[in-house]
Amino acid sequence: MTANDLDWWRDAVVYQVYIRSFADGNGDGVGDIAGLRGKLDHLARLGVDAIWINPWYPSPLADGGYDVADYRSINPTFGDTAQAEALLTETHERGMKVLLDIVPNHHSDAHAWFRAALAAAPGSPERDRYVFRPGRGPDGAEPPNNWESMFGGPAWERVPDGEWYLHLFDVTQPDVNWDNAEVRDDVETTLRFWFDRGVDGFRIDVANAMIKQDGLPDIVEGVNDEQDGNHPYLDRDEVHEIYRSWRRIGDSYDPPKVFVAEAWVPDPERLARYLRPDELQTAFSFNFLRAAWLAPDLKDNITEAIAENDAVGAPATWVLSNHDVARHVSRLARKPETGRGYWLDDLLDLPADFTLGLRRARAATLLMLALPGTAYLYQGEELGLPEAEDIPADQLDDPTWELSGHTKRGRDGCRVPLPWSGDAPPYGFSIDASPGVGGPWLPQPPEFAACTAEKLEADPESILHLYRDALMIRKAHPALGGGELTWKDSPEGTLAFTREPGFTALVNVSSTPVSLPEDAEILLASGPLTRYGSVPADTTLWLRNA
Ligand code: TEU
Image 1 (cartoon, rainbow, N blue to C red):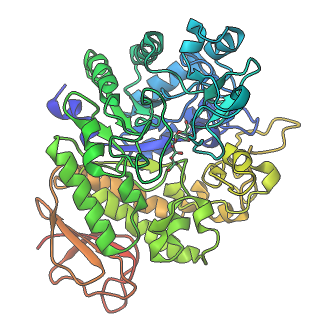
Image 2: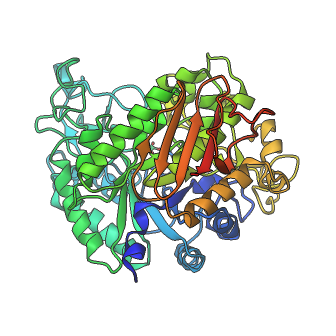
């Protein structure tokens, strides 16, 4: 194995498979391993280096599988262990790696340990695996502190004997206690379990939330509510020791296993601490996702992420969409300041132009794929899918809807089953619909008819072909992937940078055309040029330097 093979993660393009919505192989309306196996050639043709599969473990699916009941098995809704092993083999045979998702901050309340904790008495070893506390106020009827669930409402739930347990997410997702040795050992056993079966790495869910401050103090606005090391549960310095230990486990394999942290830590310097040489290899640079579609914002966020990661020798990890945020076509369909919000609920009141959104999405993709580092694609972005914005309320599944008291629709709009073919739902999502099964688990909007893989395949100008062309060039071009970027002067509202040898990216983020640099030879354009040969608004060009 060459050094380059060992470092595959430094410039990999990873495709996120939200398995529940990717492809349904058994016709029950829910995506599964069989469906994914049937579509591996789509991914290989796309040209990605790896896939990341969202949690596929046994789970009541109260939070889309981030409520794990058993970490070392497969949810029967998605398949079984034999199918998982076949998937690993078949993905590897196509030259792609496989990352899974580890959820170390909380379990499902259906986990055997949580059931045991409920059955056991306060103060028992069973309860010590979670964060149980007496309440405050008369009769302990008030929650132990003022922390709130990320989905809305208090982060505490009372059990019949009067104790409360902590859940930073849904009430069905009790936080585990990282001061408990059994908890630490159990996650390490899980990592080894999947590594031993050939899994190449893990995405780490809420990687910045596991350690809670002793005494679980209240959050005081303006005092300890920022991720600066003083927040009682976000980005505490003690979390890094966990990753040092995981890195040792990953490095004990040949080739070493890799990690990507999902840590919404806004300060890029603090985020880069997760990437020190004895910690994790990569962490999503979410500030890029959050940036407004404005040249200075994009440039600043890119520059900062690269600089902070360089300082610890780690690549930046770019991503435009995932299963938690509104699809970027729909974010970019709003005015440029959509950086202000990335959830559908932040966008609903803004007028949208989806043709513009798609044009910008194509430009944003060529920007992202020209940057040094690694990039993550979210399933369906290669089809240009918009967010499904009007799923009927009674079909919403994200716990956000209930916990916000029906004020926030949440994240279902980006989790709708993919359209593969045909002109009507389920658009080829279910290979064969089982008799009596009503269709995809979330309804597909009519706009999906124009976005099926089959239709886009037939149109050489489609976004699907743009992704394929970009990934092919990225793989072949010596300047792309890992390396450095040099910013060049460019007209206001545009970004220009070079990569050596011989590559320039020009991104026109403004709303007016700019002239094409002289002698430029176009390798790839995110959209057509104007009749006069200038670069239209919201267009990215990949150029060969003269
Ligand atoms: O998300 C972590 C998380 O905190 C996100 O809700 C994030 O804060 C938000 O999307 C952007 O600010 C992870 C998973 O990706 C998500 O699907 C789970 O619901 C959550 O953890 C709980 O496991």
